[in-house]
Image (cartoon, rainbow, N blue to C red):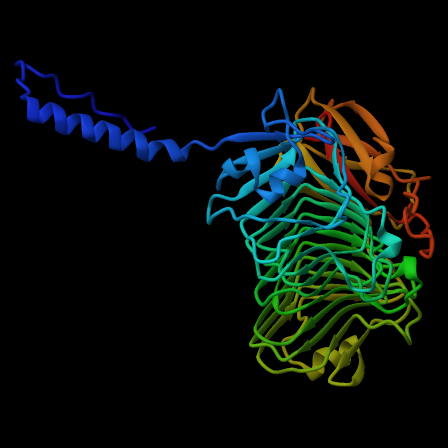
Amino acid sequence: MPSIDPPTPVKHPVLINRHQRFRSGLAIQFLLCSIQPLFAADYYVSPAASGNGTLKDPGSLATAMAHTGWAAAIAPGDTVYLRAGTYTNGTDIMYMNFNGAKDKLVTWRNYPKERAIINHPIYFKSRDYHRFRGLEFLDTNKKMRPEAIGYFDSNIMGHYEWINCIIHDTPGVWTGGSGGSLISGCIIWYAGKHLRDHIVYPHTLSFSGNIVGWTSGNGIELGTDGIQIRSNIMWGGGVTVKETTREMLVVFPGVVDKNCLFGPVNRQVAIHVQGGGALVVTNNIVCADAPLTLAGPFSTATVTGNTLYSPVNATKGLMLSRNNDAGKWTVNDNAYYARGDVLFMNLSKGLDFATWKSSNPGYDKSSTASPSKTPPDSVSVFPNAHESKRAHIAIYNWTQAPNVTVDVSGVLAVGDKYELYSAQDFLAGPIKTGVVSGKTISVPMANLTVAPVLYCPTLTQPKSTSPNFGAFVLTCGTLD
């Protein structure tokens, strides 16, 4: 830590005249006025409340979002805490009627350790700079929603942030520009009831550290040029609507890194990237009929460090399909596995691994291809970016072990009490609790249950992906 020089002592009294005192008083007053806005304020709302927005007398969420009455004082940088309970709105859709500011987002979050549930869509129109954290969203009117409607919607590409939220049994989630700058640490399941319902359509800048299961349509469609898609766990797109060709990601070029994707047999195209700019697809683990389809053209394309597995018949499963070879390509250090032959599609030509490499000199020089084999079992631990001692875990368990050992030393310390949740039935509560006694814990992989489909009887109840695959949430104590 750098040293701080002590103030120079005053050796002789200094006479200050009246004019100097006046100027000093003005300076102090100006300083105080300039400092005051730096201190953000907290406000509080509660279901069925009608108070003045204080902790002792909470107001209503509708008043807070309308920015009227006591809520007109909510300013950029302030926080609105939602006390426990379910928030509904008689007019169904609630509109945000005011802005935060750049670097001073208005934060809407659950009161610590309390479960706050919002049961109505939120539309921003052109209101901007809002952050939502630790809230649960659902929609009991889901069965009434038309096709391709978003639970959140904005007319602009907004600067919104969505952090550690729980979103389930809703229509498509983020439409327009409501995906904003950041979607991170969220847990999402049963979004949409139609083929064209998506998690994100079309804009967000960063989708990272999320868990997404059983969406009716794509996880992300289009996204944004330069989108960052990192450390997500996704599975089962299209299963609830019996759709056999749903992609989990259909995006513009950007970074697709360290994601774990799992598609049931005869159900899934995993990653489909359309053309435009620079593409980076690295360090992903993908199980799907067709793990990776690159439409192009790209200015540059880097495809390295990925584990790709096609569990279908060799005549249907393609490791990597490339529709355009424009730009500079780097393809190497990948591991390809297949139920049958390892096959590629290169500019409409089907190729085996050796022909793929000879047709593209320098490609996959250090890569491996293993026909008629599953990948090795693997565990990925993604620490939460916004809450210490919390992580998401993806387990590929091809050997079908009843329990899998997971190193949690990067998240929890010896002596920490932990709770482990299965993301396939997250609201059922922890499947295991304990105290960390070393670097590892044991995670059960057998007989994991599946959350019931709510509010939409036309959807098909999916089956558990265990014991082959599991997604988990690890916390130290209860969620924030």
